Length: 146
Image 1 (cartoon, one colour):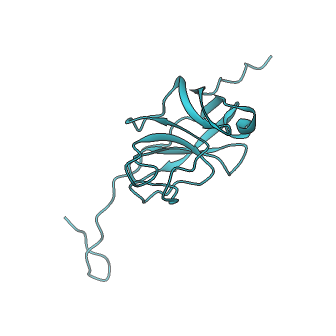
Image 2 (cartoon, helix red, strand yellow):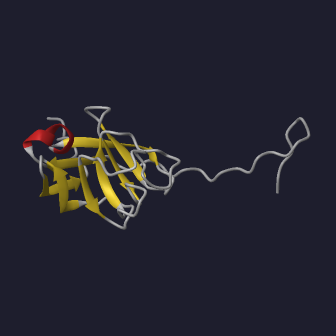
Image 3 (cartoon, helix red, strand yellow):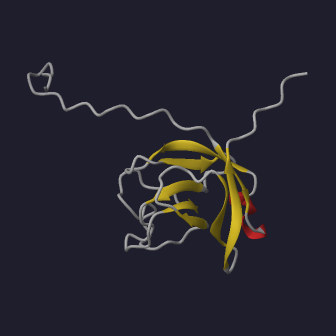
């Protein structure tokens, strides 16, 4: 049922509210050339993509993002969790960085739009591509005050 605006026209339908942003994640592991994006870096939820999956931005830099892409190339590469220097689109259905390929820092094949918590094997660009264990975990709570 559409409500009327004060000008007499119908109101647009109301979109359902987005869920609250998820808890930050800490990524550990990687290779020497990628420590700035992968080793002990906290990623803070920044929003949701068109699929409804959350995406995260590195808290230490605005140039690293963690997100789930249903197809990072747009040409059948498959679904992956990705660490990338490009902010993902919140409206595109796939190839969320819009580059027409999968030029990323790291990826892990995953049909789930939930982050792969724990230690799992990611493919990381260490020049060359290398399979490395990365750990995604919730941050440790701060120690209690003395």
